[in-house]
Each structure stands twice: as structure tokens, then as C-alpha cells.
Image (cartoon, rainbow, N blue to C red; front, side, top):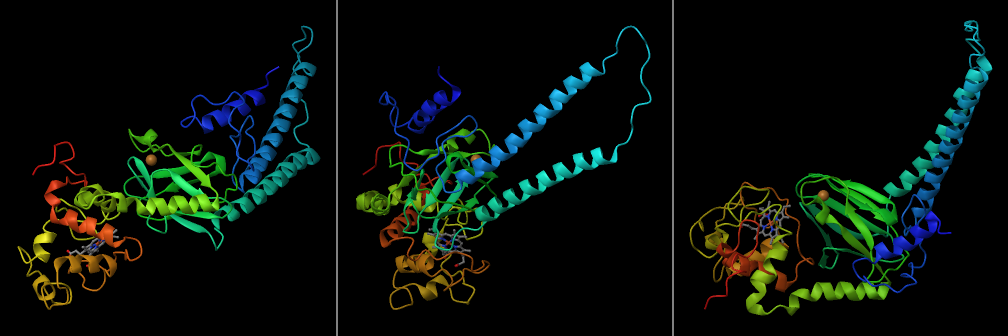
Amino acid sequence: MMSIHHILAHLAPATLAQAAAPAAAPAGNPMPEGTIPPDFWMPVGASTIAGSVDQMLAVINWICYFFFALVVVLMAYFAWKYRVRSNSHRFRMDGPVHNTPLELTWTIIPLLLCVVIFFMGFRGYLDFSQPPKNSYDIDVTAVKWAWTFKYPNGAQSDDLYVPAGRPVRLVMRSSDVLHSLFIPAFRVKRDVVPGRYTHLWFQSDAITGADHGYHLFCTEYCGTGHSNMNRRVYVLGETEFNEWLEQQARWIDEIDDEELYFKAGPKIYARCSQCHSIDGSMGTGPSWKGLWEKVSGGAGSDQKFADGKSYRDLIGPGKEYATPEDYIRDSIYNPGRHLVSGYGNVMPTFKGQLSDRATDAVIGMLKRLDEFDSKGQWTKAAAPAAK
Ligand code: HEC
Ligand SMILES: [Cu+2]
């Protein structure tokens, strides 16, 4: 009595919640409201475009079923009808070779079908390519092998959290190789290409809460850790989402002052690492190696900026920056003010993105850069703290 649809309908919510609730209630987890239940081909549908994507697939599928059946039935029938009868070894060589009405029919009908499919698909494609103006932007960075999602208030997360009921635009980039972001339940997928930004947008009205989430995959094989890029998408109601955002942005306030530079520093460095190295290697921006010596009057403090002034000219009591910390903070908030010579004015401002405390964490890290490895990981993590 159990149809495949039944089985799938039971499977889908279970996978939906697989991480959160291993011993789910016998009735299964409730499907979030506003979803399209999964069927034989498709998983649960939970975005505003899911319906039209499924419909398109159904149209193409049914055209295929129809012609498959037509061709196979006719073939079988003709094979039977024109089989060689008795033992007469006479083969017909004088059959028809040309039939204009027939040929026109089998050209024009498929052509019309293709045109219809094209226009249906093209319309969907245009909708998918044009995010609505009021969309909520989330920054996505793909690296081997993790996703980082960054929100306008500076919050960051490894899983994706989105507000329900409004369009969300993902602004995606890769720090290394080709990745691809895929959210099956939303029917959206797009490559994340090194050296360029790609966008993707969706709107989901199907609130999951922060316990169950939809799947999010990297769907472009990117090396051994590819499957570590499996994540969740949580769709939260407006108030719940705003609370979550606030709390995420506050994480840094919960760290003790002495621990700030190594607990928060590496997380913030992850936003700088594509341009600034720690080990002295060249990048889009100057390496941080030796930076603290330069700004605090040590080695390299006579190095000149593009405007001809040196670190020593700018930093010190009574000068433009009273302290090295002031200089660093201003470099982060107003990157173009004094360009390090040899580099372009390409650093984005982090004003409004990094709080004072986050900047303090960076400064603390710069002061003790030798405690970090070239990836920005704190190397003393395993050893008990000295002193
Ligand atoms: C898109 C590349 C890019 C990113 C991302 C970036 N920077 Fe920069 N940064 C630069 C470039 C280029 C310069 C040199 C030109 C200038 O002075 O603006 C620079 C300069 C600096 C300087 C001054 C360095 C010196 O030698 O005097 C500091 C400090 C700095 N960045 C901190 C940061 C921090 C902190 C982050 C992350 C929160 C960050 N940057 C992210 C490109 C970047
Ligand atoms: Cu990947």
C-alpha cells in the first residue's frame, strides 16, 4: 500500500531534520508551512520560484514520456506489421522514400515545442537573474573547504540564516578554486568563480526555525574536503532573524579582553586574508609581517607612502596619528588616506563593518603576529598559556 510518494514524503522531513532530531516524533517532523511537498523527482520546495521550476520540469518530462511512448509503440507495431512473412526471401526495396506532409509534421511540431520550452525557460531564467531592488544582501565566501556568510551588520556564520518573506541576494566569491552553491529546496544553484563576483537570489516564505534547515551544498567538486561544504539554510521569521543577527554581532563582546587577540583576531583576519599575508608573501595588499615594527618606530619606519611621507612622519605624539593604534584603525576605516606605495587604492573600507572591539582584536594580533601561523591560526592554542 506504501507508494513511492509516501516513502519520499516521510523521508524528506526526516532528512530535513536529520542533524537536529535523530529520534523524531513518529508522525515525522512537520513540513514548514508554505512548502511544496517532495515528489518522485524533486525534494521539498521552499522558495517562491520552486513551483515554476517544478512545473517546467514536469512539462518537459511529460513531453518526453509522450514521445517515448509514441516512438516505442509505433516501432513495436511496425516491427510486427512489416516482419518478413513465410519463407519468401523477397525484401521490399520499393517502399516510399519521401513524404513532404509527414516530414513537415515531424519538423514543425518539435520546433514549436522547443520554442515553447525556450520561452518558458527564458522567462524563469530572467526572473532568476534579476534580484528585486529591495533584496537583503548576504556576502558569501567559498574556500577549500568552507562557506562563510557575512551579514550587513558584521555578523558571520558558517550555516546560512535568511529572513523569511523577503528577497535575499547572495553576493558570492571564491578565494581559491571553482565552487558552486546549491540549495535544492530553493531550486537555485550558481557557480562561485575565483576572481569574479556571482549573484544568486531567492525568497523563501517557509520558516524552518533554527533547529531544522534545508540542505546547502557545494556542487562543484573542489578537492578532498568537498563534502565538508555541506551546510544548512535556516529560514527565520523577521523578529527571530533580527534577534539572531544581533546576537551574532555581539559574539565579540563575550570574549575576555586578554583573549581577544587570539580568539577574535583569526576570525577577523579571515576577512583580510585574501589581500594581506602574515608570512611576508606578496598579495593585493602589503603583508602584515613587520607592520607593527614599522608603525611603532622600529625597522622600516622610514618607509615612504605614495604621498612621500614616512611612517615616522605620520605616527607619534603631536603628529597625524598620535599612536600606532590610531594609524592602524584609520587604515581600516579610511584605507585610501595614505596609500602604501606600490599598492592601489583597492582595500574596501571596514567602517560600519568592524566594531572598535574587532579593530582592537586586529591590532592585538598585529602586535603578536609571531604567535600565528601563515593561515592566521593561533599556534599557542594547544600549549598552556605562558606567564
Ligand atoms: C581587497 C583587498 C584588501 C582587503 C580585503 C583588505 N585590505 Fe588592507 N590593504 C589593502 C591594500 C591594497 C592596502 C595598501 C593600500 C592602502 O594603504 O590603502 C591595504 C592596507 C592596509 C593597512 C595598512 C598597511 C601598511 O602597511 O601600512 C592595514 C592596517 C590594513 N590594510 C588592514 C586591513 C584589515 C584589518 C583588513 C580586514 C579586516 C584588510 N586590510 C582587508 C587591501 C586589502
Ligand atoms: Cu567547493
